[in-house]
Image 1 (cartoon, rainbow over the protein chains, first blue to last red):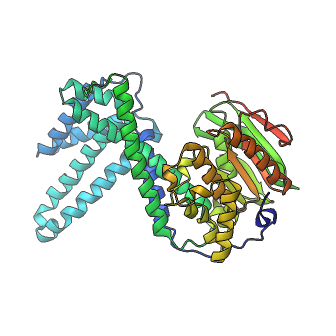
Image 2 (cartoon, rainbow over the protein chains, first blue to last red):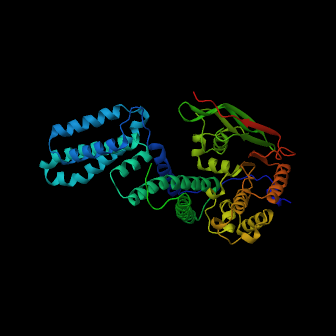
Image 3 (cartoon, one colour):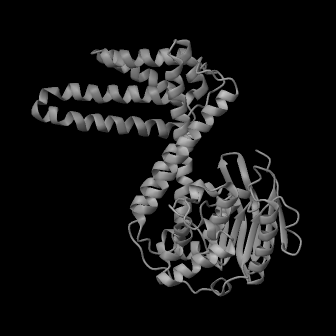
Length: 237
Length: 222
């Protein structure tokens, strides 16, 4: 038997409510976290092996970082730009955004030094260019390498299994937890039909559930792996 | 009167991989539409569109004659009125429950609607009785069983008294007794004038409940 209020049609006028900033920020954060999966690993047909790409990337970063030669920096930049140009257009903005953000951050951090000593301007520009090259190289590696190939490459370099396991699980869980948080906040917003006087309590609830679920998923996955013969020796793929 | 009109909706997550192609649908007020289809046929996408969570690349969505798009939902008041009118039960209730007690979970919506404390309390108690979950009132939703979570999530949606109920696999995870009860409850809601849109694989929903059944097919990739 339905209660009376459920049988009637309500003429609803929602009370006004401000302060959606917190929700929007968290939704964006969840999207970024769950979007990591989409961003990672689309390998082309004629891609180098992951271990070789990893060596090349590390070598390029070291070379770019230690060199003082403008010519070498320009050569490294040219390599990165050529590789970037070979990617599909839709892959470029994500890599470039991260590189530009890091470049701007480096410029901001270096600005006080330039203000105090104008002679350091050349060094500052060189530093920003180096940051742009290194972050673009990392972005390229992430964009063109499947995650399981990265873990396999790390294994090839005899990095301890527990380190690879931790990196691997962290990466996978960030994606899942981001998706869970995004879904929870979607559910909150769908049921936020008026003025919420307990916004922080709702957000706290979402964070709490995400944390609990993360712990539970971790335990469940470890147990599932044990059932399938996992003996704490992580071999990647 | 057509309450919901979808006109030539096209939707794709990635270029060349369409999920809905030239999809049109009209739903009359007080009717029950059952959506069927294999995994990946676009049921969840359709439900996201109906709830204003996604928008087609082309096509039009009209709710009570008003075009629902990103622009319309930017208006806070319009969005809230729209979300109050459409109650959405997610397939996975885990993604709907975030409060510290079942009571607070159900009261979350009504508390925002400008109702008095007594009215909110009345609604919550009615919902607890309706779904036979009074004993769970002070429990933490997170620690409930799957079937109990589903009941709490549904109660939380019903507490908003929506005109349209969009239910994604509402019978999943329930025992037979609860399924039988839910079928009867949905018939009562329909008789009370609520519009129901249900994604389910169960055939017994058609008996005395469904006015229309839509079969979604997995579209071919380009």
